[in-house]
Image (cartoon, rainbow, N blue to C red; front, side):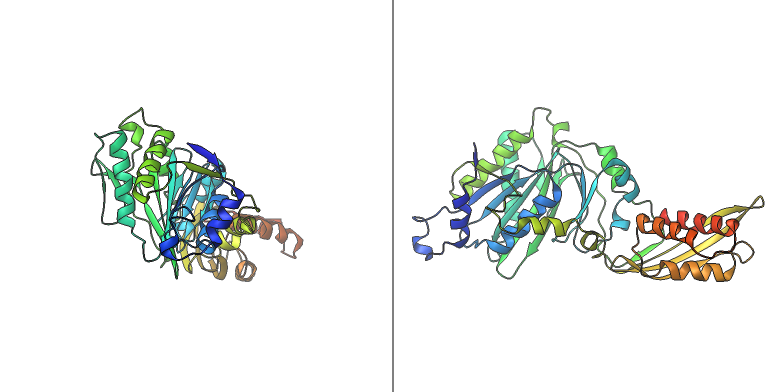
Length: 372
């Protein structure tokens, strides 16, 4: 059963503090929430808001949310290593960096996200996954789903249907996981395969896995059936009412300050600027008088901006002083194609010697855009 979320309910849930012995008689023991939004940034903001503002002592929360097509990287990951940014731009797939660790995942409406909020003391990822398994077995006893030591869920012992990540604060914690029931496996694989070569980084790397949606095992399964089963199991486990409270992640009356959190999560500084320092070493060929010349590129990137840049081209193709100027032009700029396009356009207002040099400058810039 779905019910709207009372504006007064959350206020009392967050702020009302009573001795543990009198808690049952004064307030619910927990809540089950579901977002009405499919925006990745808004839903991630809900997680942060609850983590920062809600007293979870004896009051756990289960939060359901789904997103339009998005790639979500972990807090300590490098997006250039984890996904095909060019393809994502072409397909209109959003990129988000979450506050938790873990690996990169693809979200769309065929994926259910679950976030289990508890106190730090009560945090238990394996128990949460076992709860999901019990719920799945309740609706389809023939499903062979098991949790792993890495806190994933495997279907038939080999296909990943759920990945896990978490954030553990001083007093509160949350564990979120995916539940894949339908997806375009070809698109998923393409988006999560980086085309960029020569990257050296200490960022957390994802571990590739075979995936399969639950509907491939049982076509009768739907998002609603799976959600209702998990809700029933969670409600029984925590002795709370078996219904879902719908929430709007943009409602400042329920979640004061939440829109600023969502805005922060979609800034370039957070998504790309928080990438651990990395370097990229690559080369490409240009055609010159019916022969190929090699251009070498070495770039160090810190906080998402180019810290050092060394472009090496044959002197007879691009003079050394022009290469040096190109190197210095890139330093301090964002490691992104939009910024490179701006630098390319700016070159037309400089005193580069002739149209041929301009053309070569632009060729190098376009090639470098291809690794961003």
